[in-house]
Image (tube, rainbow, N blue to C red; front, side):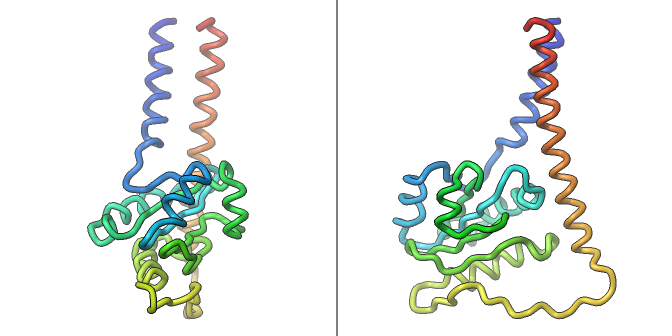
Length: 193
C-alpha cells in the first residue's frame, strides 16, 4: 500500500508540475497587484484574461509565454495573466465578456482589446502585430483594435476546425487531470492513507 501511495503521489506531482511551469508572465491574483503592475506602470503591458476550463486559453498558454520570453518584448512589455474565475470583479471592471481576452495597456491606460483567437497557427504572429498596433508610444495611439475585415475564405476552414479540435482536446485533458487527481485522493482515503 505504501508503494502505491508513492506512485500516486509521483503521478500527481508530475501532472501538477507540468501545469505549474510559467515563463515571464506575471500572474495577477489580487487587485493590489493589478494596481501596482498594470495601472501604475510606465510602459506597455498586455494582460491575458483566461480561465482554466477554457480549452483555447490552455492551448495558447505556451505561445503567450514564449512571446513574453522573446528578446523583442522581454524587457519592454509586461506580459500578465488574470484568471477570470478568481478575479471576477477585475474582469467586470475591464468589461471582459469572453475568454481569452487580451487587454493592451500603456502607462496605465487601456489602448485596445481583442477577444478570442482567430487563427491558432498564426497566434504569435497576430499577437506581435496587435502589440505593435496597440502599444505604440504615446502620441502615436492606434486606439481600440479596429481590425480590417478578414478576406472571405473559400472552401473548408481547416485551420478553424483544427483550432476547435485542439481546444476540445485540451479541455478534455484538463478534465481528465482533475479526474485522476480525484481518483487518487479517493483511493488513498479508501486504503486508509
